[in-house]
Image (cartoon, rainbow, N blue to C red; front, side, top):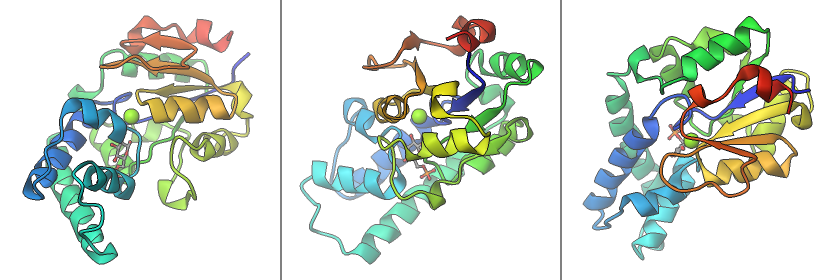
Length: 216
Ligand code: BG6
Ligand code: MG
């Protein structure tokens, strides 16, 4: 019997994965690097600086910038990304998410956000669901990013359950790997590519029943 739900944010609760892509693509272009949607799969679930480093390596420019310059580039990307976030409203919740969350809350199932994004609290407020989560893991407090399971272990701890007692929802391969590495049940929300290792795969959360998942 499961006792809690752990949600990734970008690509699971809302389609900000696409806004991250737009902001990274624009920055990469300025640096003379062209990225496409296929490459973008590698950036999903990955923190801001690691994403920048992956882009620079992809473009063969990994040695061209100092740490301080990379920090400035990451800040520039984030400034653009935050501009793109200003127009978010509850209409940007992915189909089925709010219904699923409401059903979980009606059964008193605690729900936690486990996102690598430092913008998560702001986004959840724009989507008007911030108060509906029992906890939000602070990514700044983590020592390792996804695919390491640390963020999912911390999410389970925040609601006093073991990872085995939780169900994790992810749209990124790195996230699914983190969920599985700590023994959590993994629901893969597939948009583009198949998610390997997921225990269950869906396109949208309205394909799922809270009661059935709690029995897993
Ligand atoms: C993850 C996204 O949720 O958060 C990544 O999938 C993103 O694409 C990461 O880079 C960090 O987000 P932010 O908002 O802190 O730059
Ligand atoms: Mg995601």
